Length: 349
Ligand SMILES: [Zn+2]
Image (tube, rainbow, N blue to C red; front, side):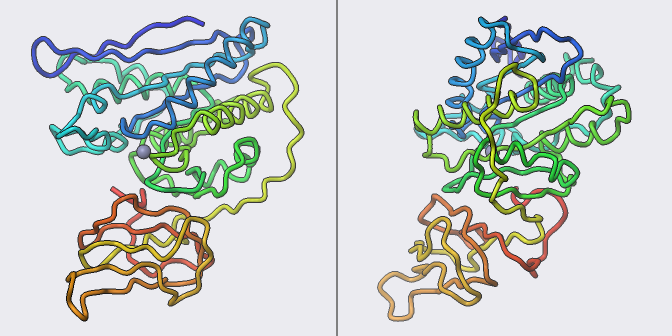
């Protein structure tokens, strides 16, 4: 394993950021290349834990000369976000100086323009430089996995429709509960990679693939889970021939892939204290009680009831217990399209 560091010069004098990059050199230059990163949303820490254990597995494979394609791992991709400690709480989703989501506003460019991402850095802000450097590394790869997590959540992944059902081996190797089929219309890291892949016709028939892997909830940082997920990623790479060896026999993935239009993002129309009535993986019927919101504590009529807009399965739940008007309570996968107004692109800001 070779290790180097990206050094990102900060926006004020005396400040710079360091991003460690681990590279495992493949024995076959023509084999597909892999890029994985964790904690772009800096407060989503299952990713660094999984990639920590994956690096251990890859060091072992390297010692046995079994790394076939180049593998680049950035276990902790966002030191800028990681340093945003506000009143003892890590604020890792949005850049505190601009309010921009760390996983939005990635440039949509073609693969041929990859090197342009590194030009004129002196005139760019630290966060733009960081995003461009990360995207530059990813666009050198054929398989890209961006590791995130949700609030409280089952194990799922966003995958652009064009990579499905080709990527069923990924869902099976990881044991995902669900796949959300995205429309490729956002500027998230994953979709910027998908955009560049889509423009390129010279892929030599390689099975390109990019995904945002949602490693359950923010509190699901656990050694047993992280080792199992690292093994899942390792087996996926073995199955794709990027690591030499036998991947375990896989039965057909039995989960469900759902278009984003068929996902209900259940929001509260009122503000108050949340009493959840449903757990993850609950199956609910239209009109069934999902949560009570105590809008006026102590009042006889101080509770608002949120009900299911249609039949579905609860995939995620807010980890907050106070909701402001319009905040998200759950994401549900459903058989019918949502009737809520939804712009193309990401489900949430
Ligand atoms: Zn995230």
